[in-house]
Length: 444
Image 1 (cartoon, helix red, strand yellow):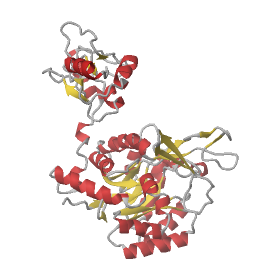
Image 2 (spheres, rainbow, N blue to C red):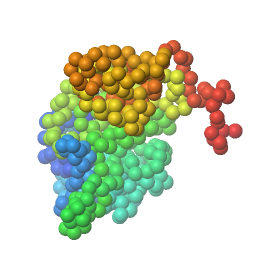
Image 3 (cartoon, rainbow, N blue to C red):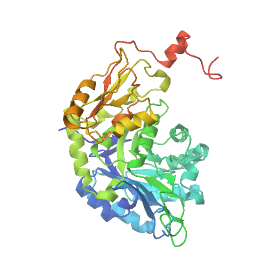
Image 4 (cartoon, rainbow, N blue to C red):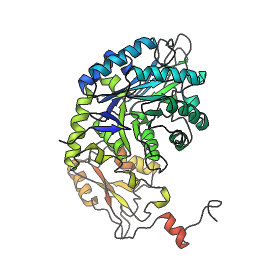
């Protein structure tokens, strides 16, 4: 069985699955139950000056019957006294010495950072995570994303933490910024030992059209919150990969954003994450989801001949390039299996109305010299069953993949390599050969 243990900036963890700083890590009792379920680490809900939360404070995006595709919250940092939290940190670490206990912090002045860092380390924390990402409530007070969106300010505050901390310091980055590399590089230059991302995205998930108030409704008002859950995973993967492939990022990454399964975790790790943090999925399904994550990731690594999760780290980064380096001669075409096609015509309509209209039904004429490998079988099935089976004209198909994504039948439509021996040639290659136009202002 593959070894799932990791070392994150010197912090040991039995596996890469950590709970993110959020409601699931609000108390020591919760974290101990999570560790009993199998989680390798936890980032304590952000400590600082206790606040008063609103009621209600959660909203969600539900899509076609699927609950919590996206999740929104206007909850702030801990509402519990610092002394109580630190006492529980000490107890958790005493009972679970082999698990990673990271504590999230958010305060204002240098003196406040110095004091809370000392007290947190004295309580036994393995590491600190500075919350520079919260996009609501705290940023209005000059903290959270107000710091994370200003690289120079981030560098100063991170520098304070590095100066006063004897344990690894992580920075939790906000996605509410134009280029994630700016705060990421600034954090590394400040001497931090790790990065975690992404924090939540500033959002409003819905509007109550009876009350005419955005959700979650707080009396007669509401506000923007932080967006997370499966819907943010693509954004998180991109930002993690952007850091993972940049040579200036020399510290480990803890990936966050929509992770709910072992496959999600494997994708983050393949793009450079050392650990992964989970929140929304735990809130949706409970702590025991980690059992499937552990089993699934272990089985996947075994199937790939990888004896450790550390072998998987960054495996996909080499294939992540700029658009100008992609192969413009590579081509795929849609292969529609007539045996699996149910005649819903979703691919036909999508291709006709929004793509190149290369998908047809029945005895639609095929231009001379064009190829359509499944046309005859599709016509035969329609005559036999009356089902409007579709087929694709490969010489019209541009390989956009839209049909694959709208088709409701798994495996019915596949994209088949139709490059036919053409050599690799990128846009940058064509510029070098003089067969493509150089963008004005970008090159001499």
